[in-house]
Length: 300
Image (cartoon, rainbow, N blue to C red; front, side, top):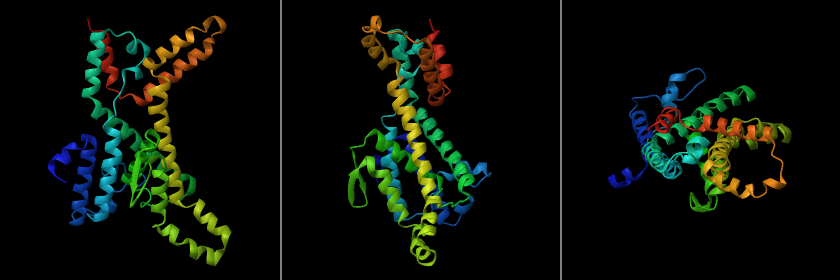
């Protein structure tokens, strides 16, 4: 990979890949012990290293980083907060000059905004890890190697955003909508949990074999990754970017206004819609816009 290709990688993805390479190099030289970098319950300082701890330098790591560049970089490049995601007073009432200034701010902060979004997903993964541990009582750091978990969640979101786009899995090209599940199945086939299935079936029969599969940490880890990915796709890219986008809803409301004489408005329903949209903005929008936007709105 030459210098031009390195700088073609979006900045947040580039920093993440760089941190993985640095930590993997240190582990390969026995300067760091990777097991002391993975997150364990209660060891909160490890949150700063766990997402960049992917093991020693190897050909497999190189392939994983290429997938990470494609998945994370593919989400980061087009990622940007839209004006329509802000409250109605901002999205519809700004004059052309202030709207242009806000667009400049959004463009300038797009990398920081994506880093915030990535951090939200990362925190969700840690919460899911604790839920899975409390629910099943099982914990395997291999399945909850947080860097791979975060990468898989991004792959799920990417599949929801561009389902018909091609995705290369080993020597196969599949649609991205199936990539998360195909990659998960391929990973499962190489786990100790899967290799134990014939032995458990031979010794204990079908019932305990099924119990081994459905209570195993791999299945629950996959379920939680899917739930996290679906939640953030639904909230960020479906609800706020489309359904509750104030710019897009303006044209919809103009179309619906023609039917006002024939409909009865429900004040409670409208209040609920405003409440939901405010909650979505609180969840998704980075906190710095709480200072930037009011200052811009009140500017003379």
